Length: 222
Image (cartoon, rainbow, N blue to C red; front, side, top):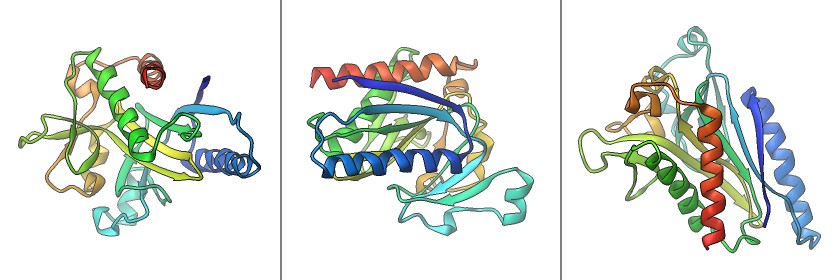
């Protein structure tokens, strides 16, 4: 099955949310109408500085005032995805796969596992060893140690087998922005990036394409 790679480039979070919500709603309508050849879209983009809270995200995990938010040129949105609070910004790959996972033969847990594995496999290309962490979504480094840190956050929504929201992989991300929140609700685990781990900046477009190719490869294996 064809999965389309779509790069929205740098886009404001509100605009991206509106666009993906429109695509999501249209695909749900098509599903309800019995359409079986719904397009499978793997969308990637970059955002300006923004914090997003999931359905059950706690306001207390935002550690700064509105005045400080303005000073660091960041905004906040509450969304209908899973998960708690996270940061999106320049240098980060924010992925919005809007897929009919029923047609791909996946349940929601299997779908999240596939995203995680796609990132884990891509990071292995750069000799960055990543793993899953029991009881938490996303992709982690040095799990079960005091140095445990997250390189990729995941939060999705699904209805009628159609997905939206997705993942956030830190490539050349300014990690200072994570110091203003409890990332994903954790107070004892930090955030990292490819740039931090490798000591050099990475090609955003190349990494985004590699995650997409890994995702397709895993789908085809399944």
